[in-house]
Image (cartoon, rainbow over the protein chains, first blue to last red):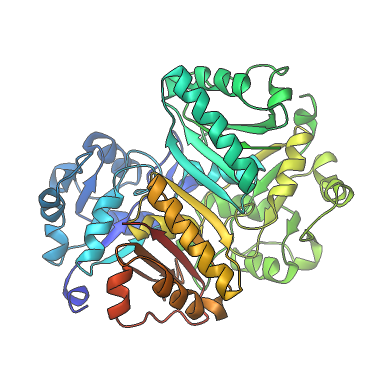
Length: 241
Length: 241
């Protein structure tokens, strides 16, 4: 499309997952690219500014054009956020943590950019989902991410059994997340509802000094010391045995 | 487990996806960690040595202990490969490209490490699946990776319609791959079998200078210029409209 020659590029800028130096989480050229940008669309302006400081962005934060992406943006709001790109400026998309447009609403902006023929460039950086999958030892050749499961106890139990059945049918690793203060209840629900032979991985504080990854069968988890997951960012992964 | 105090750590070392400098794909501390290792288990010794040279590993390649992971390793073969870890040495796991234990057999070694209580540390680096998902603009809050689809034309058509129906039911992005010389046949099969409103992303040569990402509806792809995907490493993603 002719637009691509005159419009800017939408860079997808990963954000650290917790306390760590940027040279643990970001390739130098990814950091350099982020530091050349002056226009950003972000999930949360405060955490985005903190991340840009961590990346040692050379400009004063007040000189950067940082706009928040609404959780459910309208078509008009998406168009307005693309304005810097349509005017020929590059734009950085950042989420609160990890890779933008994965497990957050950023994909809507990326989709709108594609409709305008704007070039989209995803940059390499930390993803808790991917690190958890790698570290789990569960099937990395077939997997699915389901976001949050229902909070209601009965609904959650039903959903866990459904995911376990689907995992068995497709030999597919199931990934999901929980609000950190509910992690212990999720763990209890897994032990209560899943088969003893199903394997469960609990992956906490990935890419930080506190990183902890444990994989075992549900039967073994029932006898093991409870993992310290209270209020820690955690990915849960299961694979039916 | 007491073993964890005396055994080495299994580091999961990402590998570049194509021609690019290591500071585009690897955080400096990830590269430094890889360069401290002298024991490796890899998918392919030749490509692993090339990657270690690219990362500027300081040791002569002949001094490194590099062993290949069989495609379907037996329990005994896995035990033998863990020997350096059990003897207290750190070990690096590498695939042919991208993140080890994702879309390759490396997860079997990671699983065996967990059974011994060996610490597993996944390192941040390039993943074509994750970059494709970010760059696609398709749903990043629910997605599934299915590996290779059937080669037989009728079987592949049936599977594509199945994945599209599942995508519609769960609002789930479906990711899959193809042997590069069959990419054009896969593209034709997608245009022939999917609904005009389904969105298709084609993501090629990610993280390299030749990177190209296009997302459009199947209906629009039928009228657009055919993307140049012949023999290029490509991820296909679809989301029912």
